[in-house]
Image (cartoon, rainbow, N blue to C red; front, side, top):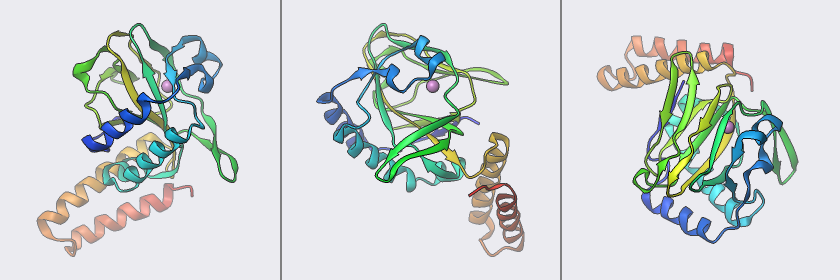
Length: 229
Ligand code: NI
């Protein structure tokens, strides 16, 4: 499932990110790449431990926790602290699959988790650069994704994806991974569709309608069957 989450950050929050990142150091993006990815990766990243990056990462995590579309579509168990990258003219990232297991640095030491979904939160207005589409492959073909600043795309971490070379300007983004309570993309997608339908139906007939109560029960019982917490 490709999940477009609109307005994760407000225009003011995007501007704040850009101000902080403008003053950040940038290092070779291969520091967080696996062996195969490193061969095709050509971008810059804000250092993982930089206090400024951590502050922005926390702001994004807070926004995600309050975002119903993200919570419903991802059913997050653990969310990796967001990182920040930048592709200047001529930079890109060739076809790869993200590492299945990652270590997140936390106050209590590194925590190992499985990457079920990958996410890119766009921080540059699409009018300010050419190229730089995130291209995700799935059973239906290739999808080229380029969203407004503050919007986010969530896609299965298992999919082959790439970032097309930048031909003008510079593309800045936050990116991260999450482990979901529900491992399978098909199951998550079904639960998200069911949740959306229940929400829409609740508005029409009320939450207390017996059919809504029954469907909400089915949702919860499927989640109980599939969740790993
Ligand atoms: Ni990737």
